[in-house]
Image 1 (cartoon, one colour):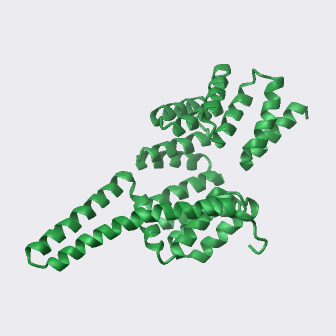
Image 2 (image 1 turned 45 degrees about the vertical axis):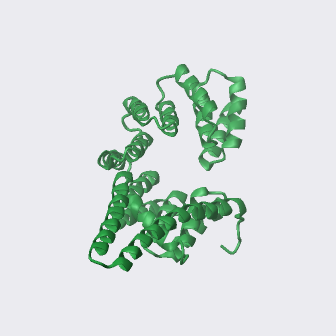
Image 3 (image 1 turned 90 degrees about the vertical axis):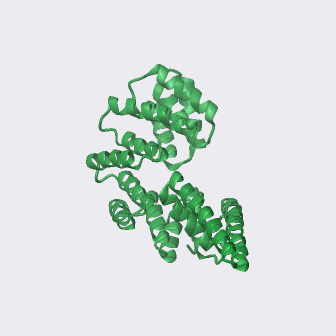
Length: 308
């Protein structure tokens, strides 16, 4: 194995582990020796995206595509950049470019499903996932993506089925364990959810997804935040437009009931309904900063506990 091959494999390995900084060091060294290598530029762009260095990532992605338009991976990296820039239609076009170059590119179908989900087009998201599943039923990432789709759709049984399949394929998979943890939490099984969160944290103490699940478990158990967490989890399954309609409908219902009570001479009931709505609004406003504070605290203070 040549020195360049060794450095590139090292960069890929650290990229997969989420260690972007180490991967960037190797890729920078490689590009110093071979500045016209499109794959090196594309991989560097992907690593820079992981560190939210958008300007540098955009430069590297454009450089990669200028050097080589024939690699599906490079188009997908550019699509991920466009997603973060909220240019979803352009991201979808880039994903289609990747799939035209390789119609069996699983990552392309998974990213396409993600884009459609962001567009709140669940039907097309499901179609893209079905294509990925038909091509690679034994791919853990595919099973996890399909399971996440069903979890977000509120179909716990199907989500559990695909999470179980993912864990059968790879019991050590962080994605599969996180998915099962989220499913168990949604079903109210906090001890099972806690187990899966801690399992991931044993391998990667800095995993933000696992820490987020850990915080969600605490919120679910908390007497004050439990109701807020349940409502937001339920609202997330509806999508943005439907959840807004639910909030508007609740506002109109409270006000209508309050007016009816006032017209019927029940002034105290009318006042109670008005104050109840105000209390719910305040509760929702307080809930988000409390959750964000709890998440920030876990990210800042978490240390691996060998008793996990």
